[in-house]
Image: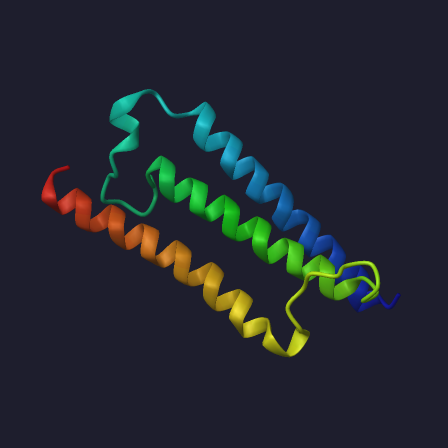
Length: 109
Protein backbone atom coordinates (compact mmCIF):
# COMPACT_ATOMS: atom_id res chain seq x y z
CA UNK A 1 0.00 0.00 0.00
CA UNK A 2 1.22 3.45 -0.85
CA UNK A 3 1.28 6.52 1.37
CA UNK A 4 -1.79 7.83 -0.46
CA UNK A 5 -3.67 4.61 0.39
CA UNK A 6 -2.76 5.00 4.05
CA UNK A 7 -3.91 8.62 3.94
CA UNK A 8 -7.25 7.57 2.39
CA UNK A 9 -7.66 4.93 5.10
CA UNK A 10 -6.94 7.44 7.85
CA UNK A 11 -9.28 10.09 6.47
CA UNK A 12 -11.98 7.49 5.78
CA UNK A 13 -11.74 6.05 9.29
CA UNK A 14 -11.83 9.58 10.69
CA UNK A 15 -15.01 10.35 8.73
CA UNK A 16 -16.65 7.15 9.99
CA UNK A 17 -15.77 8.09 13.59
CA UNK A 18 -17.06 11.64 13.04
CA UNK A 19 -20.26 10.19 11.58
CA UNK A 20 -20.78 7.89 14.54
CA UNK A 21 -20.05 10.74 16.94
CA UNK A 22 -22.55 12.94 15.12
CA UNK A 23 -25.23 10.28 15.45
CA UNK A 24 -24.44 9.77 19.12
CA UNK A 25 -24.13 13.51 19.90
CA UNK A 26 -27.47 14.20 18.26
CA UNK A 27 -29.21 11.60 20.39
CA UNK A 28 -27.45 12.53 23.63
CA UNK A 29 -28.19 16.24 23.30
CA UNK A 30 -31.81 15.94 22.19
CA UNK A 31 -33.85 17.34 25.04
CA UNK A 32 -37.32 16.22 24.05
CA UNK A 33 -40.05 16.76 21.46
CA UNK A 34 -39.13 20.44 21.03
CA UNK A 35 -35.70 19.33 19.83
CA UNK A 36 -37.26 17.41 16.93
CA UNK A 37 -38.52 20.61 15.35
CA UNK A 38 -35.98 22.31 13.12
CA UNK A 39 -34.49 25.66 14.04
CA UNK A 40 -33.47 27.96 11.19
CA UNK A 41 -29.77 28.28 11.91
CA UNK A 42 -26.80 26.48 10.43
CA UNK A 43 -24.96 26.34 13.75
CA UNK A 44 -27.74 24.52 15.57
CA UNK A 45 -29.21 21.94 13.17
CA UNK A 46 -32.18 19.76 14.01
CA UNK A 47 -31.76 16.18 15.18
CA UNK A 48 -32.73 14.80 11.73
CA UNK A 49 -30.10 17.01 10.08
CA UNK A 50 -27.45 15.81 12.54
CA UNK A 51 -28.47 12.27 11.64
CA UNK A 52 -28.09 13.02 7.91
CA UNK A 53 -24.66 14.61 8.50
CA UNK A 54 -23.56 11.51 10.43
CA UNK A 55 -24.77 9.13 7.74
CA UNK A 56 -23.20 11.19 4.95
CA UNK A 57 -19.85 11.23 6.78
CA UNK A 58 -20.00 7.48 7.32
CA UNK A 59 -20.97 6.96 3.64
CA UNK A 60 -18.06 9.06 2.39
CA UNK A 61 -15.63 7.50 4.89
CA UNK A 62 -16.60 3.99 3.86
CA UNK A 63 -15.90 4.77 0.21
CA UNK A 64 -12.57 6.43 0.97
CA UNK A 65 -11.49 3.31 2.85
CA UNK A 66 -12.84 1.05 0.07
CA UNK A 67 -10.76 2.92 -2.52
CA UNK A 68 -7.61 2.50 -0.42
CA UNK A 69 -7.99 -1.24 0.13
CA UNK A 70 -7.39 -3.92 -2.50
CA UNK A 71 -10.45 -4.57 -4.71
CA UNK A 72 -10.84 -8.14 -3.43
CA UNK A 73 -11.36 -6.90 0.14
CA UNK A 74 -14.37 -4.66 -0.55
CA UNK A 75 -16.92 -5.96 -3.03
CA UNK A 76 -19.28 -3.01 -2.68
CA UNK A 77 -17.73 0.26 -3.81
CA UNK A 78 -18.14 3.04 -6.31
CA UNK A 79 -15.30 3.15 -8.87
CA UNK A 80 -12.72 5.84 -8.07
CA UNK A 81 -13.57 7.64 -11.31
CA UNK A 82 -17.08 8.16 -9.98
CA UNK A 83 -16.01 9.80 -6.72
CA UNK A 84 -18.06 12.83 -7.73
CA UNK A 85 -21.20 10.74 -7.20
CA UNK A 86 -20.22 10.01 -3.59
CA UNK A 87 -19.48 13.70 -3.02
CA UNK A 88 -22.71 14.80 -4.71
CA UNK A 89 -24.88 12.37 -2.72
CA UNK A 90 -23.22 13.35 0.57
CA UNK A 91 -23.36 17.10 -0.03
CA UNK A 92 -26.82 16.95 -1.59
CA UNK A 93 -28.36 15.05 1.30
CA UNK A 94 -26.88 17.48 3.84
CA UNK A 95 -27.92 20.50 1.77
CA UNK A 96 -31.49 19.24 1.36
CA UNK A 97 -31.80 18.52 5.08
CA UNK A 98 -30.57 22.02 5.97
CA UNK A 99 -32.92 23.54 3.41
CA UNK A 100 -35.85 21.67 4.96
CA UNK A 101 -34.79 22.95 8.41
CA UNK A 102 -34.76 26.52 7.12
CA UNK A 103 -38.12 26.23 5.34
CA UNK A 104 -39.77 24.63 8.35
CA UNK A 105 -38.22 27.24 10.64
CA UNK A 106 -39.74 30.05 8.57
CA UNK A 107 -43.15 28.43 8.75
CA UNK A 108 -42.93 28.38 12.53
CA UNK A 109 -43.17 24.60 12.82
